[in-house]
Amino acid sequence: MIKEALTILLAIIPGILICWYVYHMDKYEQESRIQLIITFILGMLITIPVMKIEEWGSKMGWDNTEHLIAALITSYIVVALTEELIKYMVLIGYPYFRPFFNEPMDGIVYAVMISMGFATLENMLYASRFGIETTLLRAFTAVPAHASFAIMMGYFVGLSKFAEARNKKIRLLVLGILIPWAVHGLYDFFILQEAYESLMILALVVLAVSIFFARKLVIEQQKNSPFKE
Image (cartoon, rainbow, N blue to C red; front, top):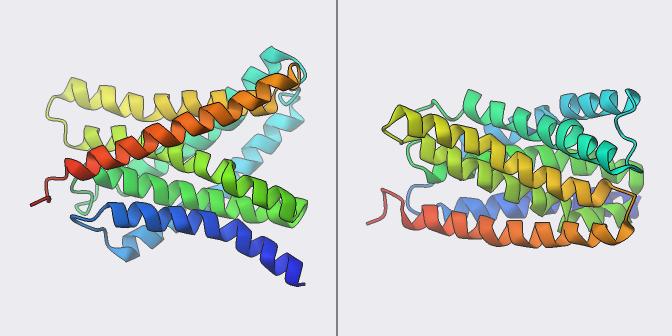
């Protein structure tokens, strides 16, 4: 019983810590906690539909990762596109057009809340199936990866909200889904492919680079906040 409780706790803590970090990085005009909780819950609510779509893809035979082409399809279409597109739709569908989305940094904040809601419930489901070892591994890999992809998405979506030129707005919105999808797909490809086991180490490289640039994007939007004195 204690081990099960510890496993669930380990599944929850990483996402909450990342939410806390991003919330406090938004120091010049912090968002309503109610809105943050709402977007976090929305992220949780999309977890089951996303996993059902991925399960359907598996049943269709798209999860044969022994071959590179099949691994690419699984990584980029079945997993990365499904997850990032649905998170993107929630980001655009709820906070993007609301009055409380009033600076570019908000794109990052709300994208992370949605993504961490998704990653936290996903983690809990994995924890109940695979135990504490998998949960601990995901705490240092899958959850930070989801956060990094969300920051990339939120960075471009946040900029698009306040872009004056229509063409620039559209270009930034496209980048808001294209960049996280591309990086997420690459990360998953290195993890999922079974043809060359040595390539799996490159997933950690992609993760490290993603975290590095994600942090720079957060700091950039923080420094450029219109609410900064």
